[in-house]
Image 1: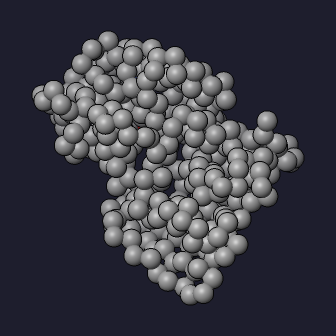
Image 2: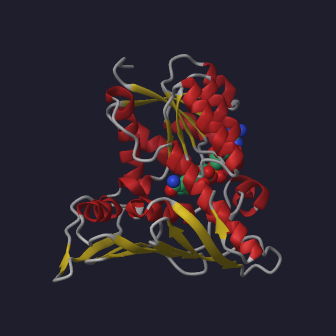
Amino acid sequence: MSDSKVRFGLIGFGAWGKHHADAIAKNAGAELVAISARSDASIAEAREIYPNAGTYQDYRELLDRDDIDIVDVVVPSYLHHEIASAVLNSGKHLLLEKPMGISMEECDDLVRLAREKDRLLAVGHEFRLSSLWGKAKELIDEGFIGHPQYALVELSRNPYRLGADGWRYDISRVGNWILEEPIHFFDLARWYLSSCGEPVSVYAAANSRQPDHPELQDNFSAIIKFEDGGYALVSQTLSAFEHHCMAKITGTKGALWASWSGALDRTRHPSFSLRAFDGKEVKTIPIEKITGELFELEDQIGMLVEAITQGKPLACNAEDGRWSVAMCLAAQESVDTGRVVKFD
Ligand SMILES: NC(=O)c1ccc[n+]([C@@H]2O[C@H](COP(=O)([O-])OP(=O)(O)OC[C@H]3O[C@@H](n4cnc5c(N)ncnc54)[C@H](OP(=O)(O)O)[C@@H]3O)[C@@H](O)[C@H]2O)c1
């Protein structure tokens, strides 16, 4: 073990947690020193792949170790608040997967705790680290499209995975399905339209193709308005095939069109493009670095290593994570009531 490496503990070794483990192991500045999961099978698998890491069925034992700098939490969403608070209370930095919480009270509590303990709280909105979605943001901030006024962020994909013990299909444990994937698009929309001010209201509709589970909503669309009149549409269907995501952003001068497609969200062989119109001509903007959530996850670990060792800023902090949850919860309220929901 090298003293200069950032020592990571990982809690959750499921479908996404295993990718986190891989991303940590690949980073030359990081070391995966401990892993916690619940079942014997996951613990056995973690031991086999990472024989040098300590393994714990009780995450509290992992937190008792004093040789861990940061804990990466990748557990079902209903456990985020419990485990994330325990991490911060143990005095360690925190990378918490989205959603930051499944209620505003949970998010507020984590924001308070991170401040009180003076610890980093990064939230896993890895799209912000993408060469594609990030290039669109860079062009917007450079004024390429003038003042942004409109963003459409849309995803067509196959159904969600069940998750360990089927937690993702149990509304009391998942919170709602907007908190699963559309949360990334709310975050992107708010990021792209940051010069329009903060969100002021949302109106949303959703439906389900599961007659026994109307609360698990496969189709979802929302219009979110910002302070200066700019607005965004976030739309998703889980009733489609493969994984196809797109963002179209227009401004007072020009327009951007970014798209990403893969057989699955976790492919290492996606196709993607960015087309840009500055009001005069349409160009294809080269994206040199391959993009997709697996690549962004690696960059997210790199970002945390630099934040801890060099004090560099986080791409998505607690306040951003909190806003993303606020937008999702307000959108669900709008779906349920049929009304426009305003933000305080
Ligand atoms: N940012 C993104 O793009 C992205 C992508 C996917 C998922 N996520 C988020 O990541 C989280 C996990 O998703 P997933 O798909 O990996 O779920 P999953 O496949 O169900 O994995 C959950 C893991 O948590 C473990 N776990 C449950 N309770 C635990 C406890 N008390 N202590 C320690 N470990 C515990 C489970 O252990 P066992 O294996 O032993 O059951 C399992 O390993 C969710 O919040 C999801 O929203 C984010």
